[in-house]
Image 1 (spheres, rainbow, N blue to C red):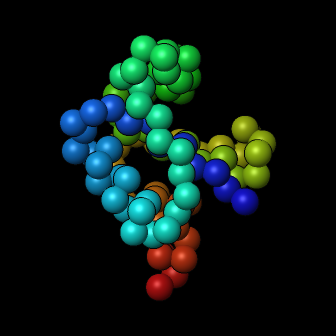
Image 2 (spheres, rainbow, N blue to C red):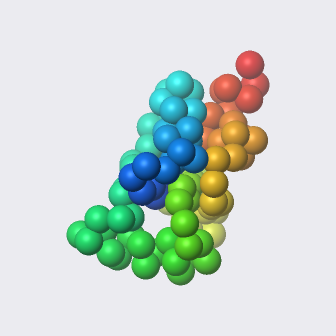
Length: 90
């Protein structure tokens, strides 16, 4: 089963739109606020992926990082394909 992690920050319109999409699709996800000091390791992980902003969505298909998809921004096309395939099929 795929796991979805959403790296966010406060007052981020694209972050809010991504959360709403995932909520409407019924897709479970873990949201991590990368602006909080205690989440500095998560911010470093986002930067290691090559991103400097939020939202960053990471979908791990089967627990193997080689099967991991990630992208930046509100991307309904990718959200439908990788996070809510039932929504894309409807």
